[in-house]
Length: 108
Image (cartoon, rainbow, N blue to C red; front, top):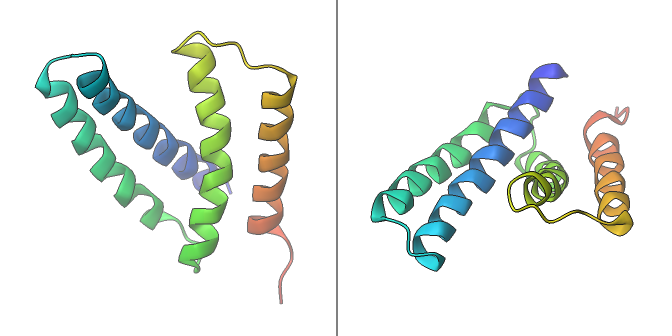
């Protein structure tokens, strides 16, 4: 279970970090190498979820979506300095509950 959580977090940070670097390049006129490095990180994001042990592609990516939401809220707070409000935290908590149900509910 710890490995699954680690891989979800690694994938999320790669997607957000890579996307952020591309954003800085295109939207905030940073040097082209930001876009190149960001794009390489986004390729890494595409690989990391495949390391999960869950057998279903759809389930892994659906669950990852919930983790991504939480990480995006945290990124906005810590990097962009946009303080999340009660509804941001409530929505993120609901997503984590949903992810937990999807991944670890007993199935036959």
